Image 1 (spheres, rainbow, N blue to C red):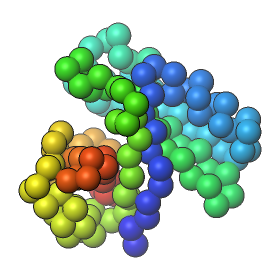
Image 2 (image 1 turned 135 degrees about the vertical axis):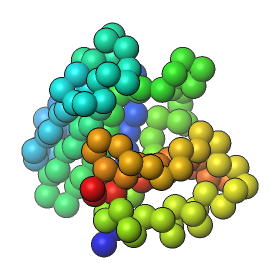
Image 3 (image 1 turned 180 degrees about the vertical axis):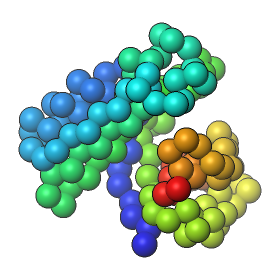
Image 4 (image 1 turned 120 degrees about the vertical axis):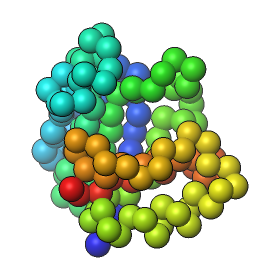
Length: 137
């Protein structure tokens, strides 16, 4: 079954922001730094302290987040610092991914592909909404 959560993108203050949200909402916070993952070799050492994945679960509230890892030509600005995050079995991602990206305005497209943490893909749809997909390995 696919699920959806809000996904927030921060520029180096993900841990601080998610810790603040936990202090307000309670729950359990998990923070994973880039330097703690096999992906660290794909990015420069100055990004290794950034959060690659944060998850706050407080009752029925789930918020996912990360620090910005994109290249400088795609800097965070208001409007591109949030996404709809779809997770679930990798086999169930393809159909909604293909329908949503629809070829009209899929800027920043990363087709579904395997990463060390599972299947991953992302794009902005024709309405300017950012979608991020992650499937279980």
